[in-house]
Length: 203
Image (tube, rainbow, N blue to C red):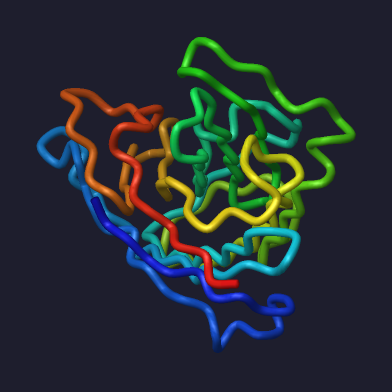
């Protein structure tokens, strides 16, 4: 299990204080070998987890513009997180346009999407215009994700959380699935809390 520490900061303006991880595991490389360059800068405030994904890839596709839609079929970054011992985990998936999906789950099949008010509490900011895109060639983009502790099934000030970070593009010209923590399933499946890594929060 990989581990990383999230420092306490004031906001994204303190990005130089963030921890950085590489999202570079390719769990199903025989069938899906493509690996875009992906990293995430991580920290937390007294109210939220902050994640800044940085991505460089050889093409870019995104057509989903509906909240809680099929964002994983586009070029998409994802943050799955749970409190130790909880039967639930939350997944936050966001395509490169900044369109997101938010849900609380027991499993891939057993879940409930956040309602509109709760979904709006999760802030997403993309470096790209909010317009559908489909192009080839070198592309770089960032996505900032701010997830309040209040929307998570966890203590108000958790000391430890379990999580994984992903980059995927199920419906792109080159489907790909990469993760921070390795996953041991035979086929692509990010809904595997047993393979989450550990986040240690400094207070």
